[in-house]
Length: 203
Image (cartoon, rainbow, N blue to C red; front, side, top):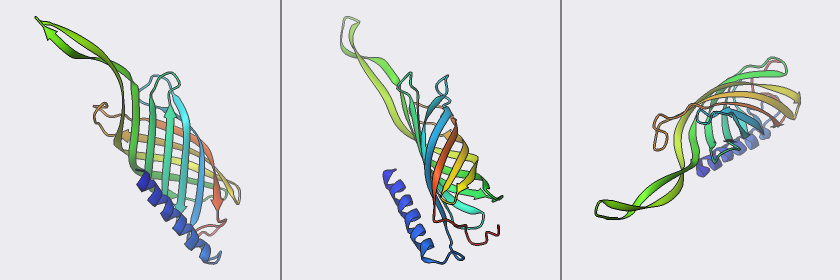
């Protein structure tokens, strides 16, 4: 997964350099990189859990772009955390300083479970067994699909703020026999470079 994120970031950086090579009127890319706070209904714990996000968007057409996203939300009362690596497409519209969007992403989710005790038999004699207590916790990765929507607001030519919602569907696997469906709300800010809009922007 680290290799995938590295390749995506390299692609975004390359595209940014190509966009800067053209004139302002013909610039083909809108790029922003940011982060913020996330709060989730984890679909595992009974309480909501908080954490952070990091995201990057490259909008290369008038209404279409790509997004990569990282979230980590952690339960302060247990070892549970949910970490996600996501990449996909987004569709957006521009209304002055407002840019609402919808998105569809695919990725991997890493789930860390509470510690469990289980008993391992170490010897048996005459129908009586001696057991050793073993403590363990699961830290496993699952494929996932993500649908979401949000709003970017231009504060300055270099700064956008964001409100974002995601519905995540983690596929079933060892430790999560039915999968989970977390819902994540995030608030953040991004550095926007270079200033300008994609080709075809008319405002």
